[in-house]
Length: 204
Ligand SMILES: [Ca+2]
Ligand SMILES: [Ca+2]
Image (cartoon, rainbow, N blue to C red; front, side, top):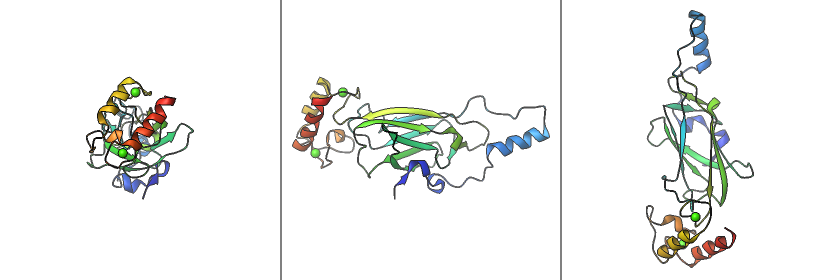
């Protein structure tokens, strides 16, 4: 069942962590060695966001991957996706490799793209803990868009997009080939997809 990103059940994201929160650890160290700052790695944990598989197309967006620089535990509210109106977008978060670093988000209906629009993805560092419990986790914001037919990802439908669509027209698609030109997901780049493409060419 899909869960809203702001209230993700931690148990679904990662195994329950036995680590104590960073604050009590720091407090214990401070109590035993009051003149010495608790040791912390110099660099905070950072994240990068990959849209789909990293291809520049934004014609279809059906997965996001957040990769942290070190192993982390996510808590409720750690990852948040909102549309251009600030409305939360539901999605499922998994860590398929169980590496504690690479989290895959499937927004919306299974296998389907986000609707056209602008999106903001937020990593709330205060809700993410490094597994070692030592370093801070940076809060970060990423922005991206989805526009059907935008095969070069520049936010508009231009001559290059038109050429790609023409070359794709009439062809069957696969998970790795031209799937992002198949608006209705019937496995073929057809008249229904052309209709959607032309509708957007008038506006973008
Ligand atoms: Ca374009
Ligand atoms: Ca189609």
